[in-house]
Length: 341
Image 1 (cartoon, helix red, strand yellow):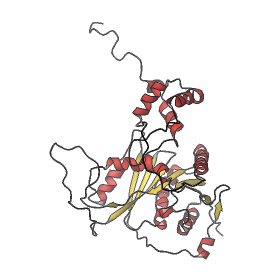
Image 2 (tube, one colour; image 1 turned 60 degrees about the horizontal axis):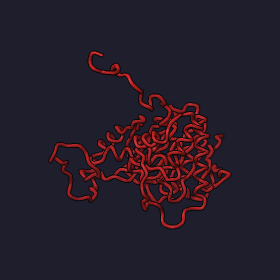
Image 3 (cartoon, helix red, strand yellow; image 1 turned 180 degrees about the vertical axis):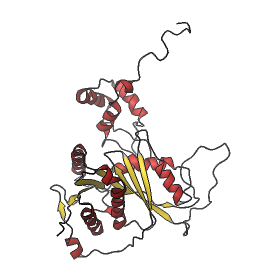
Image 4 (cartoon, helix red, strand yellow; image 1 turned 135 degrees about the vertical axis):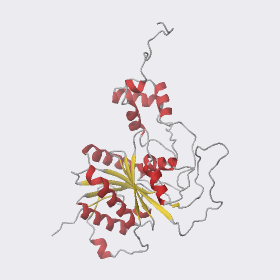
């Protein structure tokens, strides 16, 4: 060629991911549930038992994708995965003997709901955040020698308050919803957030839905032992007409809740180094959070009051149409809508 090239411009071998566009999703499915790490960080890692050659074999045998283990290693690096040494992050004491069975059950139920096109959501409350010109961990790009100036103390300012970001992550569509509560993080608040998601997003995305699957932690405002949580879900079932299937993660396993590493970690990354000076700033930073997989998050503010210490009587609990699942019923159950006369 006249310009000295041996190939025309743009010629040559196409990138592997263009040749095999499904390889990234296939790898994610293979290692999903096998990955470990701090969900507030972007980096996860693959355990030694899930070797590169094993991933290679699964890609070839089950997905029909011809790839070498060397290329798998490169792709994992591009996806933000690496092998690392252990970190002391797990609970003290013995884990529940039913832990593995519960993980397997959640995986099976998730597959059923997703394949049927029924909504599956992961819910949790993100860490409370003080509103004000406080230091926020992390760094941001600014002109050299021009750091952002923040207050020299971390004491909460009463008139500015705090926010409780309660999240709903929709596995079907890789979308999220955050309700910013300005009062207490109670069971009533948790259920109100799920109802807010359903009214603003869910019922339009799933107009034919008759059931929904919720995964959540086993403690906090959505505790598996909370009477108020179950009573709230009954009201939600009656309001929406949905059969509500709930699975709680075992004790010490909340870090594996999907919302942690598919939504909350990206919010934390997006606002690192930026003071949450007011609620409008929090809403903007959350709403502008996205990922390479096109995560989209809606954010609303909830100024309602949620008193703490409310007791649920035996009579109220008896009105809950609660059906334990056939396996591990203390962690898995369905709340059925009560028939209206």
